[in-house]
Structure formats: structure tokens, C-alpha cells
Length: 561
Image (cartoon, rainbow, N blue to C red; front, side):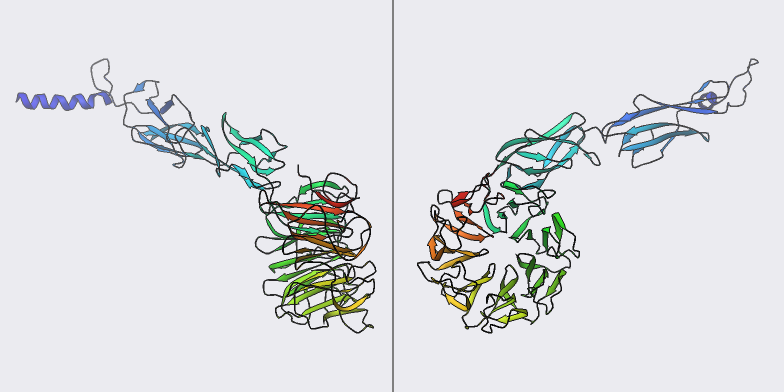
């Protein structure tokens, strides 16, 4: 009996708090919950994984707190905040969510903000060197909060300790502007990270000389140009100014080839697509219009990929991966080889179905060597530059087989003459010879290939200008011949040479490029095994790249910032 009574009392003790006792000692009905108040000591969380304890209080109509602790907790957005059965909320993502406590079908809530604060900034990739002038890399700032969770959608503030050495834009792309070393920093919310970047010496691998400008390709895939920029052919911004020292082409892409034409420039990017910039009145940029000029690289129309590109005076040609020749631009003498004289603003295939190994584009004619060693030329033939015996053929709208049957392995085209390298590395030239540019000791025009005389060594590379030519030998010596009014032969004088004359002052040439009245060569530095660009000849537009505008009859080294 006592046990039963005691047990019954315990049950009453449990339920008694849910009712009120009146003045007469009688039990009244339980009070109803009219509102629930939720409080939290911290309403903003700054790191994922941070937690905050929430407290809920139930009130009746008389504003008396009710002794209820069994609340049901919920959240409006589990991706922002989760909450457990005891009312502990945990940050899961940035944003705002309402956390609600419910009892007796009455709810109360509080808003919680989650805004990650950056505690650590780490720059990726772990870069320490830029490979010469113009090299660029995108840096990425990896942001984390104090619990190590990543933060996305936040832009850090980028800063270079010396923008004249390495500049950095608002997206974190760093560009080498000159030699030296800098610290690049990204900061946000008072946290920061940095990398120390050094600009390595610029290494060159190829070059091209245009009418009044020059360009070179670095090992990092950057194109540097200098000289005349009236039509934007340097791609260093709007046209109208010349540049006396090299400046990087303004294009966040990497090139594998470059060619400088009359007043335009073209290059191939790593995947084989072509870009061109500069003068475009005859469609030589190939971008499907005849607008005056483009001061920045524009894509050549179509989806073709190329393995070689050559820029002529006012036309451009390129060789597809399969060996098909395509041309675009001026066509007044048939230099596009499409059977017409219509200018083209998009690439057209050269007729004849030939498969070429190499091409070159001159002032108004084009030549190519096929895989079996046959050489074809098309376009202007006023001076016999196509190499055909018929003197009545003033021009040709389609490829003509060069006479003589000599199997050539490379080809070059100049103002109104052509030269080719035979398998035994000897050189043959034909066409205009007013200045002795055929190298045969005369000034007589030749309409068929004739061997170059003089002491020229076996040739490894050719560079043809308007009326002069230079060739590098297999041992690095360079010889030039033809017109020399501006010192473009590099022999220390201004007299024309009817046979090859050795370039003075520099040896170790790997590549040569000849412009209208100037020449540039890539010469190996035997001390460092790197290659340096030298130029000589006319310099009225800064095309020698040595910081001045005076002509030079000896090679001068280009000046880098």
C-alpha cells in the first residue's frame, strides 16, 4: 500500500508543472503557449564548422515563462546552417538562414548569418620564375577560413612591389615587363599571401622582319615586336607610334610561329590556329572584313589549323597540317593562287591540289616547295620571279612549275625575286637583279634559277628583303648581297654587293629575316648557349630595336627593358 502511494506521488510530481494551482487549492487547466522567443549570443558565424548555442523560451498570454524545454529545432536552409536537437547551430555555407524552435504548435525563430572571414591566402601555382620579357601566368588565390574551409566568390586585391618589372591585373595575371625580381601579393579581409617572382633572361627561337618593323618569338611563346606601328602591326595598342625597343604583343596566348609582312603581322598559336594584326585594307588579316587595321590580334576566319604562316607585302599564306596552301589578302597579280584576281578577306585554297612542305610570300608573288622537291610560284612575274621561261607571262593566277628541275628543300621570296636552297645546301636565285640580289656577279635579270656565286658557305637559312638577301651558313657565318644603301648587308659599308659578303662583327647565326631595307638575325651566344637578336640596316622607324633611329651598317643588339 505504501509503495503504491509513493509511486502515484511520483507520477503527480512529473505532471504537476503543466497545471496552475488556484487560490482555493484546486488545479486549473494548463496555460497555453502564446509565443516562443529564441536567443543566441552570436548571430554571425565567420568560419564553416563554427557553432552557436540557441536558447528558446516559451511564454503564455500573461507573459509568464513556461517551463518547457522539449523544443523541436529546424532551419530554413540546411546548406547554410544545420541545428541539432539540443539547439546547437553549425555553419555549413555562406548566407543567411532562420533557425526555428517549435513547441505546442507555436514557433519562434532567429536569423543567423554565415560569412566566412579569410584567415589564410595561398597563391597557386607555386611560381617563382617568368621566362623572359612578356611571359605571363595566371595566379590563383586559394582562400580559407580559420577552420581550413575554402572560400569561393571573393576577389583579393593584387599588388606588385614593382610593376615596372612584373605587373599584375585585377584577376591575378602577372606579366614580365623587364628583368628583375618582385613580390606579388594577394590580400583580403586583412589576410595576405605572396610569391616572389624573378624574370629570367629572354630566350629567342625565331624572328621575322617586315617592311618597317621586326618581330621575334621567345622560348616562352611570346611575340615581341618593334619598329613602325602606324597600323597596329606591333599589337602593342592603338596604332600611330613607333617603338624603338621590343614590346610584347598584347595577347594572352602563346605562339609557336610568327611572320612579319608589309604592315601587318601574323602568328600561329600552340594549337595551330592563326592570328593576325595590323593593316587590313586588302583583307590580309583574314578575319572576314576589309577594315583599315586591327591593333590587336584577331583570329583568321575558319577552323583550319596550320603548321606554317607567311606574311607578304599585302597578302598572307599558310600551310595546313595536311600540306594544303591557303592564301588571303591582296590578289591584284594573282598572288593568292586561287585562279582569280579578287582580294580575299578569308583563306582560299591554292588551286592545283599540290601538297607543300614550305611556303613563302613576297611583295606580290608566292612560292612553295612540294614534298617531292618540285617548286611552284604564282602571282607577279614582271621580273621573272616565278622562274618560268615564257617572258610573256607577266603574272600567273595559279601555281607555275619553276623551270630547271632542281629539287629544292626550302624557298624564299623578296620584292621581285626568289631564291631557293637545294639539297646540297647551295643557293639558286631568279628574278629581278637590279641591285645584284641574285648573287651571280651581275645585275642582269634571270628568269630561271641560277646558282649564287662567291664564297657563301652551305646555307642553313635564307632571308629575302625587297632587293637584298642574307643566308646563314651551317657553321653560323652569315653572308648578304644585293642592295646596301642603308647598310642592310651588315658588312660595315654602304656599297652594293653582287656576290655574297660576310656579315661583320657577329657569328653563330641560326635564323635570318630580311625586311624592306633592314635585316635581323638570331645568333647563338656561345658563353650562355642562348640566342640573341641582332639587326642592321635602315632604322628610321626603330626597326633595329636598339633604342634609336639611326641606320647601322653593322649588326646591333636589340635592347630589352
